[in-house]
Every structure is written in C-alpha cells, then in structure tokens.
Image (tube, rainbow, N blue to C red; front, side, top):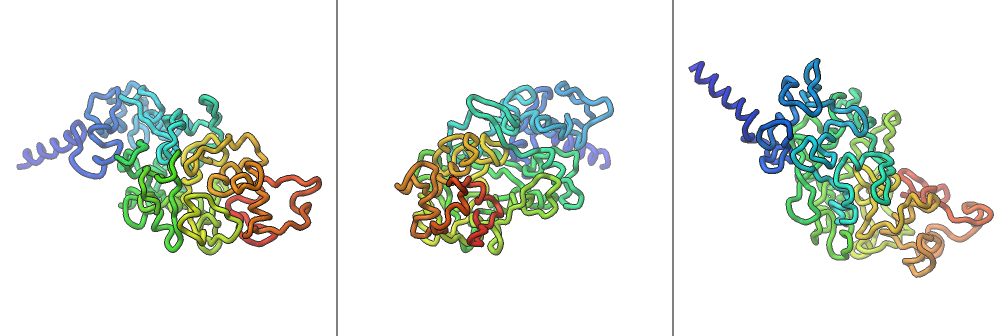
Length: 417
C-alpha cells in the first residue's frame, strides 16, 4: 500500500510538472492556459507549465539567461525579479520579441485596448511602454510608473502587504497565477487583469471580477458614465458595447488608491490622491459645483453633473507619451497635440475632451477658457481686478496652476479638481 501510495503521489507530481495542470484558477489565467499560456523556448514542456518560469534547481535547460552558479533566484525564477526599470523578470517575455517566449506577447496602451484607438498600436509590449525617453515614430515616452519605487513601496514591511522585496514589482498589481488575458479591442474574450496590492495573500486573487468591485459600485449614489470609444458617439469603453454605467469596468479608484491614498508615501514619489466624498476631488466623490460646461456623453443623462471618474478615464497605467501618464486618446478622440508641446496650456488639451473650451462653446479659440471661467451662466469667477490673478500685462493662466489633485481655489475656497 505504501508503494502504491508513493506511485500515486509521484504521478501527481510529474503530472503537475510535465503535463497540463488539472485544476485551479491558474488554468484560466493568461499564464496557465494550455492553448496560449507561457511557453519558454528553452524548455520542452507543455504550454502553461510551471517550469517555464520556475527552475527548481536552476538547471532546467536554462540557456537564456544562464543559470546562476549559486543556485536559483528567489521564487526559483530563471532570472532576478528586479534589476532595473527595463530588466525585470516579467519583461523577459513581455518585451515585444520571441527571444525567450515561443511567441510575441502583445500588450497595448489602455487607450488602445479599452479606448479602441488603433493608432496607438505602435507599441505592443510592456518593456517599451515603461522605458522613459524611448522614441517610437514621432512619439516619446515621457512618463512612466517607476518600477523600483513600486517595488520599494509594496514590500515595505510597515505596510504589511506580504510582498517580498525579491519579487518582480509587476506582481504588485498583477497576480501572475490568476491574471487573465485581455488584449483585444473588441467585446469578445475580455478578462480581469489586476489584483489589489492591499489584498495580496488573501483569497481575493483578482479585482473587478466580482460584484462590489465595479465602477458602478464605487460610484454609489453618484453616476459613473463611461467615455466614448474612439471614433464613436454610441459605443463606450472598455469593450465597445452599449453598456455605459460601469457595471463592466473594474473599480480602478479603489485599486489605485491602495497606493495613492497612503499617508507615508513621500519616500517613494507617490502622489497622494483623495477621491472621497467629504474632502476629495470633484472628479471623485466630492460634489461638483459650477463652471463645468460638459460635453457628450456627460451632458446627456445627469443634469446635476454628479459624476465620478475612473482613474483610467484619463491616465495610462504603465507609461504614456504625455506628462503624468495622461492618455493620448480620451473620450473618443485623440488629444489634438502632444500636451508636452506647450507647457503653459498642456492640461487644456485634456480638459477639452470632456469640457467646453471657448472654441467648443462658440466663444473663441481652441484651448482658451475665458468663457467657462468668467462668462458662462454658472461661471465660478466674476471679471474683476483681472491682474490679481492674470498679472500685468494680462496673460492666460496655465491650467495646472489651479487644477491638480488636491487643489483648493484660494478665491472661492472650493476644490479645483
């Protein structure tokens, strides 16, 4: 009986190592799927097999990169979890090549994947997406999530999130054993991609796949209105469907605020953001007031203007051609110019994707904002002593001087963002 039991155990172990996995969430993951899961060139094993990432003794056909003489890396990965911004374990495959993986792994900007702007498909991998100052075509990556700071933040023992400082920083947002595939710009084969870092080590492996984890749930008594997909005024993000209430979108504010709402964050370069209903920004749960002049679809079904936004309505999660991870396409259209071209008015090109500037209001030039601020019926400021704000000689005010996360208007005492 002992021999029979040992044989059964051995069969189970060998099946797990060299055959298809039999059960568990890993089978449904982008890495564990037997059709399109991980498949490392140097190892002759089944697609989705654990050995493609984990070398138990650092000696399983490891020819790229070479195994270490002193044994396996942390978590028995075939290379270190993190060395630099562009030398991360996950980027060995997510680099736009088939050097390590048997095929190219495509990952795109959120504005392409969810926004549907195929013009942004010129970058198809995460390594390029997070490489600061990388120029592709006529565009340059000018802002990224700094992966070293991400790693230091999530593995800080004072935070209690149970991350090891030897892990790839990507794991802070993506559970590698459960993350699902979602690289299409159509309504088919959608997947759930993120895991909340504060819930690492719990049984809630994915964030957004359950009730209570959607943008509609976060909005509560307010309204989440999905932006238009690129080139459409009837279809919405993130899947090009008619669904616009956030019931098909991950609650990204709760996800992002795991890091961006932390207090002890100054050592990691993380901006603190308040999206709450009592002291937060007006694009969050804090009630909006006047001076909005909204564009479609935000002017259609909510006369009070009490909207709450998802972080990814405006921002890319990995890297961007614009400052502060601002998307190149927002609410159905591309920003007219790269917002780094004119530092004095850079934010205006983003704002006019959802708000009426002077031109859209029929009152003046593109990216001028006199009407909404001083003339419109719900203007926040009366024209009086202009030089007090605009200086002498009179000049426009850069949007970023007044509008940023946490901004409070010194004149009205109200939130400005």
